[in-house]
Image (cartoon, rainbow, N blue to C red; front, side, top):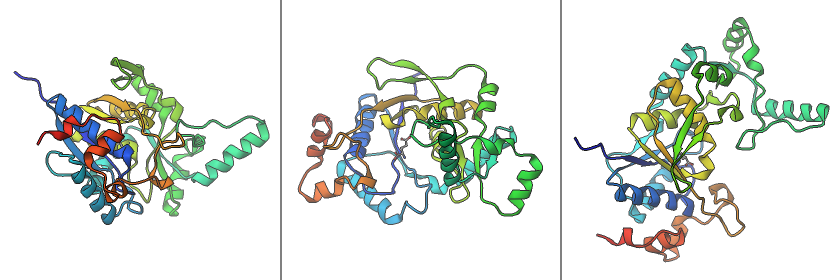
Length: 299
Ligand code: GLU
């Protein structure tokens, strides 16, 4: 029996205009899918209703269309599947692996600053550079949790990383093809501490929804920017805890701006739309991101 074709996906967030970095990721997914006879899916990671708007989504779809990004089937919008992420969260809560955390981001920052002041050494940061959450809410009694939730205090669900790693016992790794030769990369989830799984205003998190969706969509090949390499360690833990299939990962180089920094919507980096309005063609875009023109040229 023939093996099932590999399944690729491009999963942008419609919270700003696409730039060259997105174009590279989308086109690389499409090229690899084509080269390997694979399927190509599109998922919109629109869990943040404050930043992801229908207007941005419409522009994103137009830009991908213009680029010639041809995905299969309908688009999966994460905002239409909160029940799936809720079920995964409930499973983790039910296993005693997630707990309500009331500390706000500001309180975490103040906690870190007070530590640095008192100890004269830096407070640990996670791989994204954010101060590590100190885990204080893990120590609350069940009665106190219930009372604070009943009083309407906002909270986030956090993964009890230590308990999770104890449960899994064996160290985790993932297959990575982005560094030339395929390699098994050891996961280092402890660097992230007790990551957020859901917040009151966003009923899931990137980490939780990405692993649930990759599994539901049968994704076997995740091709995305190197800036998400460290996050894959968290994804491996969630996959192991939830019994989800594990894709092969390919973290590609990032397209950098003239100042050597990664492109970002928030920095106002030049959008694909602006390049198109300036008269550039999709073939020009392929060249600008270092892909050969051939893959685009066939009708
Ligand atoms: N939605 C993420 C982003 O736009 C990508 C997530 C992924 O590919 O896993 O950066």
